[in-house]
Length: 318
Image: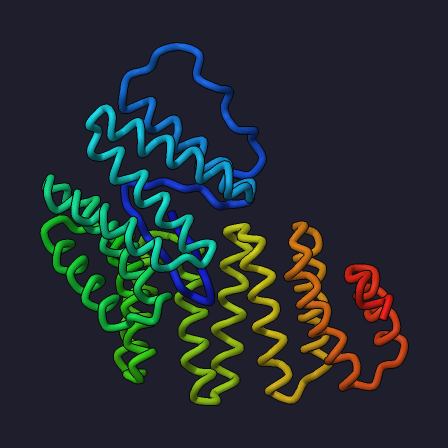
């Protein structure tokens, strides 16, 4: 499964979670009414969890993943149990419960080590590192990623290596080692380009853009963010497209083009609104209002503020 937050990716091999827009369309499978082989039963429950995740119903996803874990334990299905633990850990991380995520991924890592499941150990270490990174334990996260990279020498996997190099780059960036961070991001970028993974490549460009932004190299930032937008459009990553537009609005403003910043932020607002993401739509619209005020465009201020009032009734009643 993959999750991107400003270029941050989680990779868990052996745990498949579809989060692309098309995966949200099919309804969850009907309850199983006939006996199934043990592995299929666990996989079916995890698959239901994946579908609920894609639909944004995290409570039901958690119930499905927990049921999968319990069934896997009762059947002594070690691989299924590791996968379910990683599913539960990723879900915990998604809702901000980083310590819970660390505990769950830690259990998955221990099991993978005990049973010699190298592929699942690599995935578990990567996920555990991601949780530690979000908790602020950057050095621990770096050690997990490095350990996983060493294991990949025994069993090469381009996708896994790209995720690890990207996330290790974030650790180096946080430590102030900008040169090493950029090198790692570019290594991940080359790997993702070779395997045609557009959405992951976009994530690398976002990270490179953020590095350039820290150096105030705004022309370079804009090029990186524009490339990320192109790739996310090609991959049809709607939520990431909206985030790319907001980044571009910020950079346009810093480059002294508030009119372009207004256009980008309004496009981001329309994108979030079309996806039904009301909180993000409100945030993007508020940004657009700010740029309209900066430009002194009275009609656009009135139009955008009216839309903001319509989206936030409590605001209009004040």
